[in-house]
Amino acid sequence: MPRQFPPAAKRGTMVVTAPPQVLINGAVAQLSPGARIRGVTNMMVMSASLVGSSVLVNYVRDPLGLVHEVWILSEQEAQEKRDGMEPVRNFRFGSDADKTKTDN
Image (cartoon, rainbow, N blue to C red; front, side, top):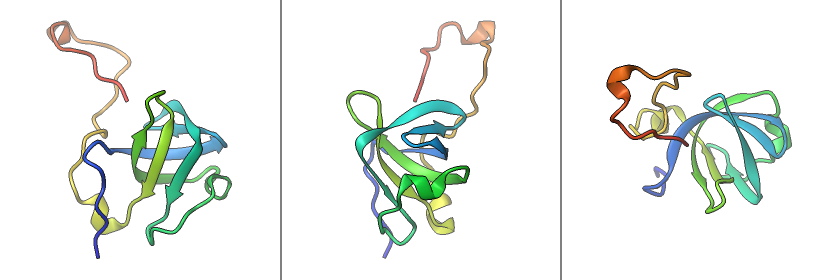
């Protein structure tokens, strides 16, 4: 049975560096104090067991911007389109000046 993710969930590549510190799509982020990480079988996964591993995830942030819910994706779930995996650049083109900046 496929898992249903909240509409607000974004897609990203997560690397746990030193819990609660993580990288989401290469950007520094932090897990919330009550963060839940669920594996492909929907069982809870401890962040310490993922240190150094890069996993494709859907995630939701709490109102403070901390990563609160994380789902490690199966191959089938990874095929679903979701916001969050847009390329990140460290520069802006002049033609992008009128566009609003988006951030995780």
